[in-house]
Image (cartoon, rainbow, N blue to C red; front, side, top):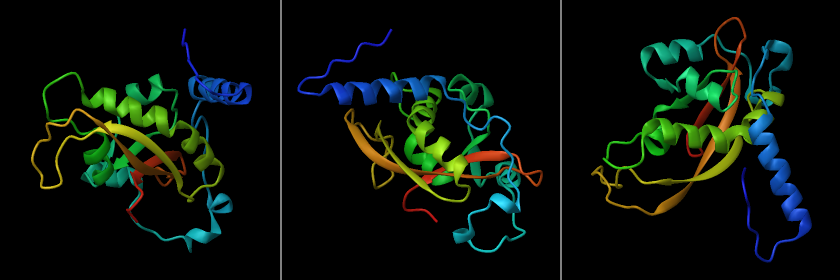
Length: 176
């Protein structure tokens, strides 16, 4: 059971939070979704024969979150992060109570609404924000910070492999 305290909020705000919690808890992301050229976003330009997401996972260009973790948050589609997004939002090298699987769970949970939107409009980016504890400082040293910092990430839905099976890609908002 989740109890939410709202001070100074309105009944409409409570209804929105309840609906958002229900969506994040119950909605499945990507079940049976397949893409073809008919449901591509024309703004993304002409189709190109380039590396598939599955090939990018195999060569280490992107990082795929474990299937068991994605399934726990009710993602049926594979979820991958660009290397930069993984380093910023998930990677954890410090000792303490944080762990990469918990940080990955947070990314999946916070991205869920954007991922559902992205599946409706393949190729279009959808922004979401979340808070995370910094792992490394700007100069590359391990951080000793314990405070949360807000980061912006984008979600886009694309074919995972040449069969058209959908996947969710999470990237930094500053990445192309």
